[in-house]
Image 1 (tube, rainbow, N blue to C red):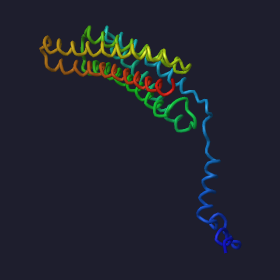
Image 2: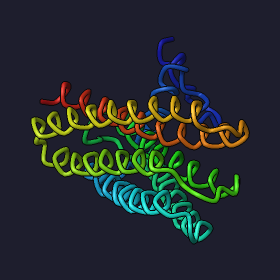
Image 3: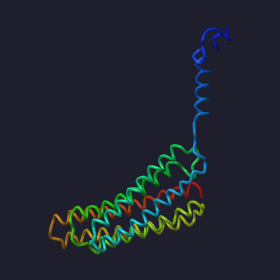
Length: 239
């Protein structure tokens, strides 16, 4: 009686003749055996290092861009090429997350770091692209100052990745404090610039154009601070 409920002894039967419970276990175990995981030491840090280097190069080019608008089209393309590279690296992080069983720290933090770093370069390119699209003839000291502040923040962000790989968490915390300070400095430049612009600039169309550019630069500094916040969260979990 019991045996007849478990397996039909006659006929083609096969897996379909197994009780639902045993059938489910068989399919689960077979599926588990067939799963292919990337080896546990998949190096996400190499991808973050590549993304960080792209950010460093782009930030240097952005400072040069806002210091001198000559050769604007070529400079914008250089930043766009780096932005495209970081897009591809972000997709690579997501692909590896989907294939890797064990990660060096929380999957959500890895994804958030990659996404925020991608956002930074998107905004940098957006600022340069708008200056080109708006056919602006001259840059401003304030735009260059914001770009320099952003470049300083990116340099600190890049330094944190080696410390993260080596698990030197106190150093990461110190760098994050510096990043927060620079973000506050960027906020001050942004607010002072808007006030000066509305006081001194008479062309309303020009005001709208520059306001968009300044907002992109300021939002990029905010994204750098977001990266610092994620790093601080990782430090709290693993220190």
